[in-house]
Amino acid sequence: MTGEPHIKLVEEMADDVTVLAPHGQLTSTTATELRDRLITLVHAGRTAIVVDLQNIAYITSAGFHVLLFVNRAVAERQGKLALCGVTGEARRLFQIGAFIEQFLICQTRADGIEILSQ
Image (tube, rainbow, N blue to C red):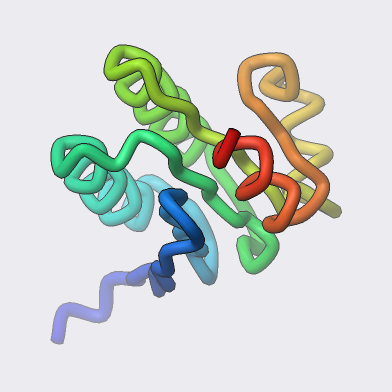
């Protein structure tokens, strides 16, 4: 074992919407794991994705870069990416970085699923 941090990714389906909930810190090391999983989903034809950030304690610029990259990849396939659980420190960082306007941000996971199911 290398001792490098990993991120736990919990995935589920709700209707035709894929929900991915990362747990931990979204840093330059762990952002790669999240990006790889999300891009795999997009390439598999999953174009309605909710990323639940409620269990993310911290997010770095690498995490924002991954979310922006995947948001663009989903849009290129005429799909939608929604974020939920953007609270506390994560929300503050989204606001500081002016990322709030870049994403479809929903209050709850259920809200995100409902919007993407339409």
